[in-house]
Length: 274
Image (cartoon, rainbow, N blue to C red; front, side, top):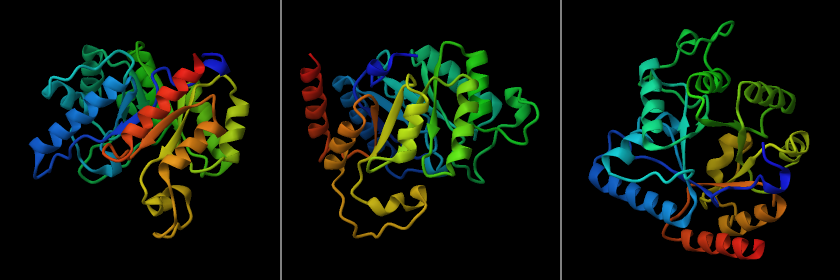
């Protein structure tokens, strides 16, 4: 692991990209939109963080979109999310394809399932003594069979604290080497304690970039009114100040309304560091 002062983003912000859904009625348009966003993230020097069937909705895989569209995954600038809702064959196909494309970073998460999605069995990932596969078993399998991958995991500061810290320890013991938090919109005491406990662990703070703050209600565990005032860019700037030694993971970015300002933030930070 890297020293605390150097653990922030190696390639600027992590920008979340959601691949087109498989039942899209305008697939060609959605693919071209994905391509334009991907290319802009690459040009910015940021990391494209590509989701895996987000919210349990069947979507194309990130590597499928990259290959189909003839995109270039620049070294160190693509992070593929990988959840437990796959067959064993599909899991290995995804990892092998990512290796071929030069993608070597994975975020291992349990994920959101649905009746349309299969679920890995413990025997699929050589896990013993567990009833179901979680990100712990998935991380251990990837690190054992695909050692070239750097594997990250999630940290949820809204879960019961003792349980979440115990889960994080098991994830790190399984081979995880960086963490991405659930979205936070202010300085968070549980996240602070995690940073104190693991002072050299690379941590990325998730910043919620949608103005629809109420959509966070299910994550944080309490209702947020639909009319709650929220400025995503101002909050992002505050988080950069609260957590200067952490990277930033940006979810639901508005490419038309926010991206230029985000690039300017990164440029100013780089200039200040030099």
